[in-house]
Length: 178
Image (cartoon, rainbow, N blue to C red; front, side):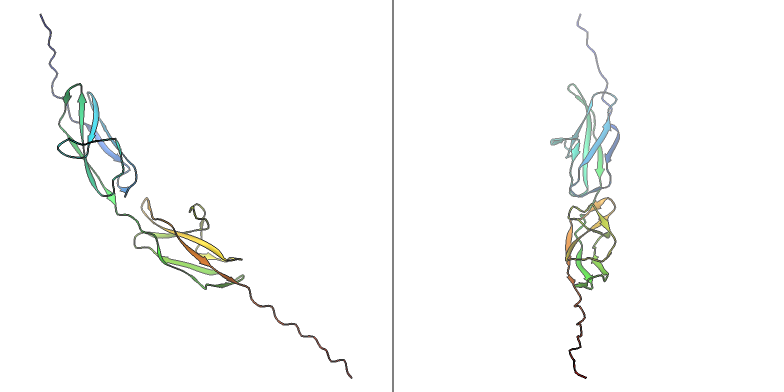
């Protein structure tokens, strides 16, 4: 006699979610899900013809499809919509008032974000955040980006020049006569 084991249909993946969600355009997103039997396989199309890794970098809101696979058996698919926020653009209209600034006189940095809020930095890597009121002692480049949720724009830069106030003239009395 030959023993035949019949396996019931595989259950579609459960606990399906993306991390993070929503995500920033082009950022890495991990697709998660679990199978009661077998392992999860992800696809970028409903026809299940194009498999993808469980880490993706969508640039727009995208729907992915997951199935459970055990041997040659496959479950029905479960879909997962990964919401992607629009890209955040770099700030524009960067300015300092006054610019050039007089030595020792504060200058106010400003700029416009199409989306989000502006942040100012003293370094090009945008790691040292500063206030928008600065008092440079030499010509200094400041950097700004826009932040919306967890999405950060590219950095833009602004040079603030410094003018040294002229020294007051000294008056020497050369009158020696009486």
